[in-house]
Image (cartoon, rainbow, N blue to C red; front, side):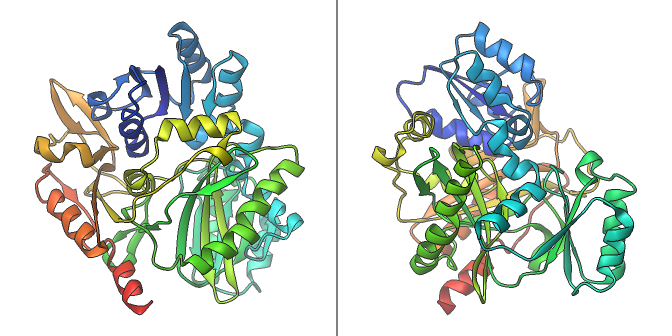
Length: 423
């Protein structure tokens, strides 16, 4: 089989490495891929938002199955366009991808169908939004409606911060059209949990839970990033919590989307908060999370391609989705200055014996060398029987990888270790 994976980051590298394990796969193309992915797939310089180019390439090269991984092409209708040419895909169509593409849509969906989430208000008028936060409880959460590279959410600790966030989104257009509407919602408290789930629009099979670390600095300090590391499973996601989530969130979400004529197939990401009042939805994503994928897929024992095809074909109920009873830790190695400004072009060196567990996010090939090209450069993952062993092994691998101006958080997994002891 010839496969095509749309995207070019660490998430896509993790997906490609797992797909390669299927003996029927003869070739994998990555569009556009990156310098590190080039070791595992043939990279084609077609951007993930170039829907016409992607479809043309797939048709001309006889692609048997496509995986559309990032949010932008999903929201733009990449799956619809490929399916129109008879190419089966993993991922939701545009009318279902709106669950991530519009926070206003997703919040209204939850309200309509009684899915637990934070209380909220929607604003299209900046002055009305500013007036609202003068009396809203603080802290409060300000969200741009549309996609914003994971950066369109501001937790405002003061009224001044809330007003600044609203002006940045609605007046300064920091996130473009994504800020034309904003959601202002109550600030929830409790541990956060990420759960990715395979679904064919009828059956939901959750993957191993995970815990993300969004802040750039140790002890959750510094700016929000796309994610500085993850561990799996998340100790706060107990079997009892999982049962509640399935009954009150996962299945009701799939039923709600079906009722709206927006059947969701692919990977649905549930960003959850385990509040004193029970689990609530913080956000949905219409695809694999990054870097959650880098800890979840290494624990998957079932064949990924088989599971993906089952979501496409509607046969997920009869398909085994099995995960290893173990722990995983992923540490992101980034360029100093991320997520604001950072240098590029520094050579990356790593020993061959750990390359299989390194997922390349921001690197390019130059004169036969791998060099940095992004803020988040590598995801370094280890799997072990215990979380402490996985953490130690991941940092052991990190110590063997080198590039100038590198940095990483040194406390990935510590919060989970503490929670595990408390539980």
